[in-house]
Length: 163
Image (cartoon, rainbow, N blue to C red; front, top):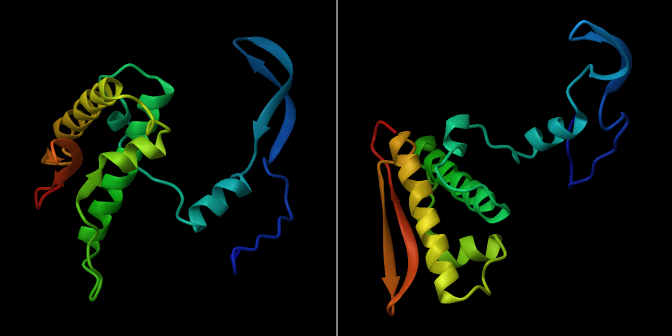
């Protein structure tokens, strides 16, 4: 399949499934759904480079799982992997991505831009725990929070040459 000009013509079911009868825990079950092929949605996402592959342990940061913390983990992980990829690619005439992540970017992507100062401070603490987890699992070597005009502004991510 080839994507041209963001146009997709779908000639398959979105989820390639069959309904079968199967034995589950020793009992016969009617109507078990069996996925017999890779979903075309997965194929399209891979072609458009919309998927991130990483060590699943990175997602087990020691923070309570809420919609916001899951979003924050995803945003940080996606941005860090993109930065690492741009550094590792070593393509000529291509500038590596900046290793700075703005707090405003994280908060706006998670729908937290309108939160008060105290809530944002709590989320910064969560971000710090997630980043420490990434350091513990060798995704990054370290990080540093920066302030601008007395307010937390950005996070600078550092990598070892072996990361």
